[in-house]
Amino acid sequence: MPEEILFKFEQRMDRSEIADYLRTVADTLEGDDSLTLEAGADSVTLSPPARPEFEVKAERETSSSGGPAELSIEFELEWNEGEDDDGELTIG
Image 1 (spheres, one colour):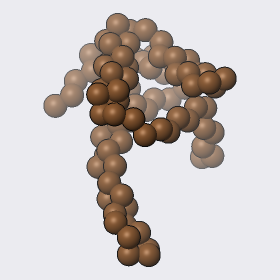
Image 2 (cartoon, rainbow, N blue to C red):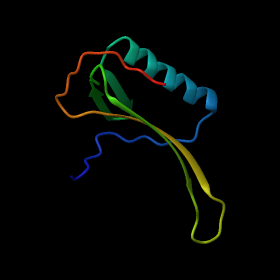
Image 3 (tube, one colour):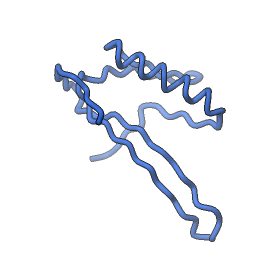
Image 4 (cartoon, rainbow, N blue to C red):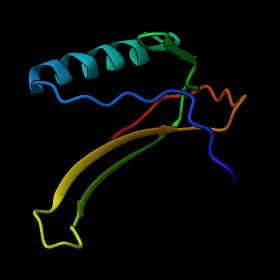
């Protein structure tokens, strides 16, 4: 299935700034509201269902030139468009 990027933002920032963004996302999810992402002229509003799929991934990407490896943590919410499943999100 082809992938369409609806919004992308990438910027180096302090860990405390990142934590603030993550708290805002968490508060929005808990409040059952739509989530609006904005950066400059780019904007997208998404409405996750009550039980989206939640994925956490830690990766190490090694450089082919022998440079230092790049480490990353990814948090992803995924659902089918139009999906609206009432229920409780459980993270264990």
